[in-house]
Amino acid sequence: QKEVEQNSGPLSVPEGAIASLNCTYSDRGSQSFFWYRQYSGKSPELIMSIYSNGDKEDGRFTAQLNKASQYVSLLIRDSQPSDSATYLCAVYTGGFKTIFGAGTRLFVKA
Amino acid sequence: KAGVTQTPRYLIKTRGQQVTLSCSPISGHRSVSWYQQTPGQGLQFLFEYFSETQRNKGNFPGRFSGRQFSNSRSEMNVSTLELGDSALYLCASSLGFNSPLHFGNGTRLTVT
Image (cartoon, rainbow over the protein chains, first blue to last red):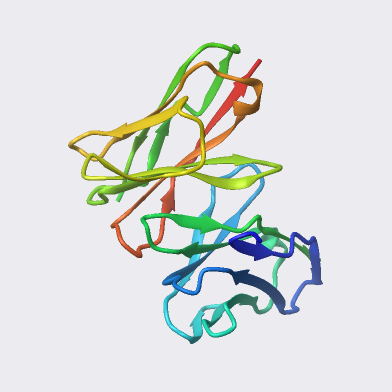
């Protein structure tokens, strides 16, 4: 079982819709959770950090964490074509190591 | 504040050669992590350094090594290059424990 799992996609949504990206992790002791966006040919950039159960909102982005279910998600409201990228879920499991999922490719159709 | 700086951006090497990649972290960040990114394997953890000490190492052969200097700058070295080492090598810095990683632009290594 992979430590951090994401649906590879591609996930295709129309412009203005809500994009929902999901991630599960295997280590119950995981402490911190991050979402990164990576455009083709670029390096990952941090979108959101979340550390406790519940929702955290930042602009059009909402991260949701459920530690009991070992599940973290990212919602993108009012999706724009510029949101088309690969979204990486990352989990700090302790031991000075952050583990990344394989990423979900998102396409927002104009 | 300047971001994470990686040099060089691109490298082309021949099998059997060795290569050294450099990373300068964000000012004040003492933790530096290295990752290998390939289309098939995604982002794979190589190692993490903090205050010149390697605190964790990923599942890579001993040909992959690194170090960190007193100013937090870090280098990674790959010896006896193989074709499969062709990848994007990403350096990321952070404030340390539990903090998010901030990535540099990466070094794209091609081994021929």
